[in-house]
Image (cartoon, rainbow, N blue to C red):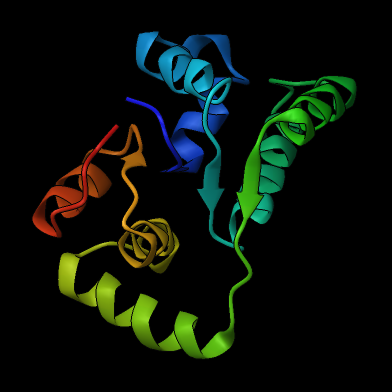
Length: 137
């Protein structure tokens, strides 16, 4: 199966940390050779925060973070702009309805609005996606 899809940060960060990597994350990365991924506006901040925390805990060096960011910039990942009305309206309502954080619901919202499948390693997000009839990659 190819075509565009939504990818959440749980998958993206598995590409950075060997102890989180696995066949699923590798398969999603491979899919990016033939398809484009979409992410909500929150995604770059989530990536940056995970990398900064990893640096502070000495799990990564700054150079490792910069190298990983450079690699992400080469991938066909499209950051969808977000407006406050949608974030405080549709996304918050969706989060409430399916029991997710607004951060996780923002990925599901992108998938729902564009009719795209979602790639995630987050169990709660997978469950919510299925409940909303969103295919999971």
